[in-house]
Image 1 (cartoon, helix red, strand yellow):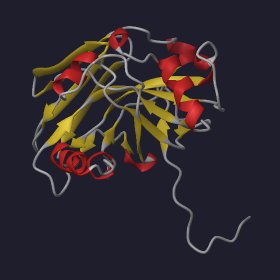
Image 2: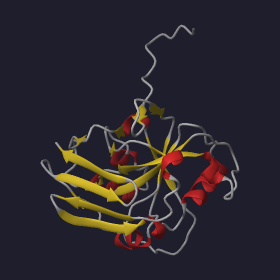
Image 3: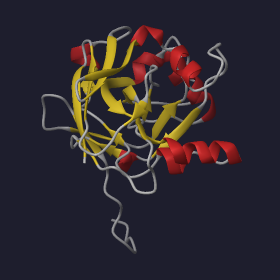
Length: 228
């Protein structure tokens, strides 16, 4: 065994639905503006331009059901997304073979310190301070493809305190799951344990302490997250 000079970081594991097993997380990729209506509401042209990605950290994923309101922000937004969990990877993966690398899917939120992200955009700086803060990706368990199949469509909604904020359908994604995997693999060597967050529909908005967010996707169940 290697003699590490400090204790190695904990491996982040997401629960597998219906089991006591865990899915170990290696990296987290997030695609930006992958629904046309969301691109418009963020002030961008929804035409099919090349996709772009940013990253969160594995330990940003949090299946606890609670989202601690983060410091240094007064404008924290919800972004309801489906994530893809990879069981294998590689480089230059073809669109036709991309789904062979998928272990399962799950529900997640890309919580965003929108005010800090906006400041970074104005200065042409990276977004991590707005996107990759502690517990910024509340999520549900992994649902294996072996029991679920591949959800090519399904209504997606998010409510805050019972009020509907976000609605959409998985078939409205500009870049579909096989295309995302293939494109990413041209620039990164994907591997087992990678998570891809697939973008959010329109209706993103601010939350406050005490709010209850409930995300639902046909065939994937629901996820409740309390803002604390």
